[in-house]
View 1 (cartoon, one colour):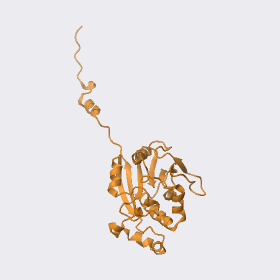
View 2 (view 1 turned 180 degrees about the horizontal axis):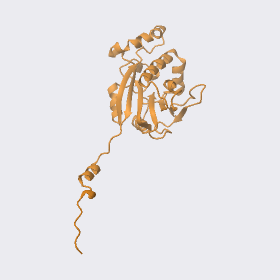
View 3 (view 1 turned 60 degrees about the vertical axis):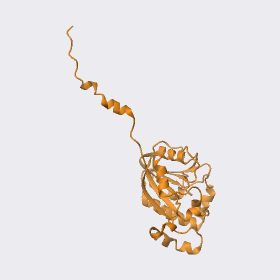
View 4 (view 1 turned 135 degrees about the horizontal axis):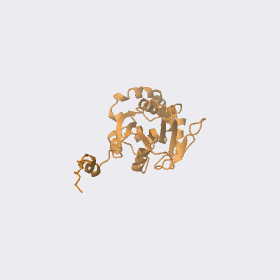
Length: 246
């Protein structure tokens, strides 16, 4: 079940914890996608806080917000690029998206298979999709004080297996948000330290968010048709029969 867009906005833009989470996750997204010059970038769910770095150079940036969640105008003070959409029917041409980011989308969807099919449809050749989901092993999925405490948390293998089943090829993965999901001053002041030490932490204190990047897999045509055709010699290579006298 999708969260209300006003709650998501209040978390990311009006709370210290949400602003810290936005900064941390955005840095990881930028490590995977440092630029998008001349490309079409789309985000589904509530991905707009992480799309801002691409507004300057991308050919087009689109924030797709599902109907059950609701929509807000974004970005503030600039021409609006966000649109309210049906969860599995986006107003985008097939194969025209270069980069697709899903945040608070897959784990809260009641139709994850159909949603992944729509992701596959809009993604272009050579494009990539990045899923940002709650990490089942992390603290953030266990606290309903943040958006990452709602929906279905994933392990890396669970998410990658689901993507492979829908013709995606997982390429890279990361975890982040090692800081505890707490508004207390001590945790806010030491958040940077926890993030820098995150890679050395045990699985008990694993990163709260899992990021998996995948590409669109297009399977080669299969079936007996091609093989049967190849077995038969081409007519132009057969020797012509000798002409019979009339």
